[in-house]
Length: 486
Image (cartoon, rainbow, N blue to C red; front, top):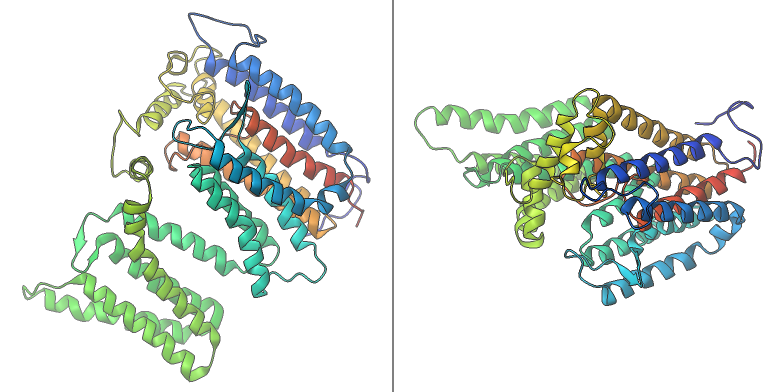
């Protein structure tokens, strides 16, 4: 999509003012809500008291403004030329952090220098975005070549592994949001579909893992049916043979229909085994069509089917043997398998109470009882949104959510109007990271996504987060400023 006309593309050399206004507004609003979230009724301090959380955030805000100004003065070519050097330095810093960082709440991700604490993982967001943009901007680069796919996967997954080793799973998951940038630059939609399917498989497999249906759990049984349906949809979408799709579905359904009458005569049916037989028949059907018609798409769909079944069979092992107990409990609470209101579910439970007590218009600035009485843990960092909900109500929360959504769409629009692959790829990376943070952070505060400990951009307390997002955004604004007119 391109944008034409002088109203759509400002003159070269101008910083996008609307984006800067959004940034300033979010930072100011975040600062005010940090003050509200950390306000102590017994030892009240002023908004500008540098000994308070709000005062410390004000220092971070001031340094962020200086950083933003400096980034706008650096030539765009600098970012492209030294993108790989930044990446190498970032990887080395993550490795050093893993070795020397102290254990803080179970995480080894903070470097402490005097009174200053920095989290290098936050800065890897803009570094990965620059590295990907640099790779995609190569003249002969084609994403779907095997060596290029491995290169791009390595750029993203190496930091993911190092950050997971630091026990910062939430930040590691943020890096995976760059798949949206890859999708824009030519990654087939099938890859995105497989990622979504894997999430659905995992949720269903774990949520209904306690009830057995013979050889499979109830979750695995439901997922096998979904695999067959998804495979049929892929035949219809990629092979374009409706008749083959219908026969594929009816053949699998026939196996279940043949077993049902038998179950009416007091014969115990192992429905899990029936599902496995239906899946096996579907797999053989795909292989037969691949061998007969030599259409490689059938082989790819077969591999999807087989890989999906292997994934659901390993999901329980990963959940119970790889994830830490507190991570398991967070997912169980989110999926409604456990309540645990006094343990892992306490954060979300209190957050829901705080947001719900705000009602339509909220209790007013500094009048939130849940936050002022410190019922909500981490209320000025990961759970800052519950302060907005309690003090400004449904109207205030909706307004903030709407403005952040508009801001995300603005970032995508700026990315789309870039005249270089480097600028477009980096812009989509910026927008993807922001959108992921916004959705997951607000989702975990209201209990619809697991608590993975990532901040709300520009709102949550913390210098590393604010600096990281400021660098991420203003490098993009500098790239956008220097673009050529179409």
